[in-house]
Image 1 (cartoon, rainbow, N blue to C red):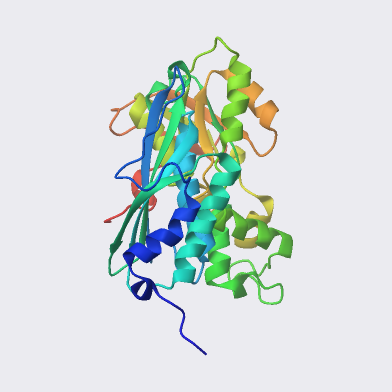
Image 2: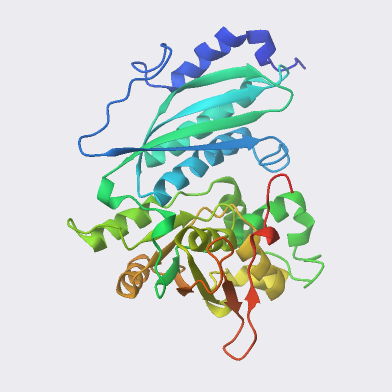
Length: 352
């Protein structure tokens, strides 16, 4: 059996020539890409870095899925800004022993994601490194009055979450420890197994997240041609639902009161791991790539009706009560039970 060809065998120029086929022919080949913005639009730029051993591994993510997730993470940020994708650049750092098949699988996953949501690979850079990493900068455009920001929430607004949370974390758990989902062995806490349909759905949520541009389209339809987004705050929930709510509140100088019963949790997930674990994964599991929005109540109800389940109104914004730097975000199990306070320190943080 022959060893797979590596990028060290091919060399930088040879690898670049292979990767150019994933880019528009009239854009790559110079020191930079020249992009014309559509009339009346502003440029939105976002960057995300995925590192082997931190954000992906061969145990849980095939090369094409790494490429898809890398692009989806950036496109989700564009959606959270109300922007439409124009293209991406890719900074790729790789060990010399990386197989060419792995790199081509990575780019195929990127191309597949872009073909679904728009944009193209506009160029990038290659370098040698001890650990594989994928740094993507995404470019999008938005009509100025329709841009969404984190800082525009006001006290008394509804907090809307566009979909289930905890599914990606459940998918990761099943990829790392598939025996926990086996119907005959079950989860060590509950003894419950996982139906194949649920397993497939959760693994897909982890490996192939979907940026929610459909939410932006629905919101724009509800606002109408003359409507603007001055009273709307938004953020994506890739770092966890609790993180998104806390970040929105901090940026806007408000607090929040959330209802535990309204958290968007898959019932099958609760049956598998139990309520306590399901709530923790919902709040802090991360990588669900949904949107969290603070909206006036009539608009929130209209958006919920438009999107349908599992879009949920999970609570409301409040006067902060303390300082904007440390907003009070409370989760109420019931109206008669003392709330718990959510904290950024409970979720994943780099360097901690």
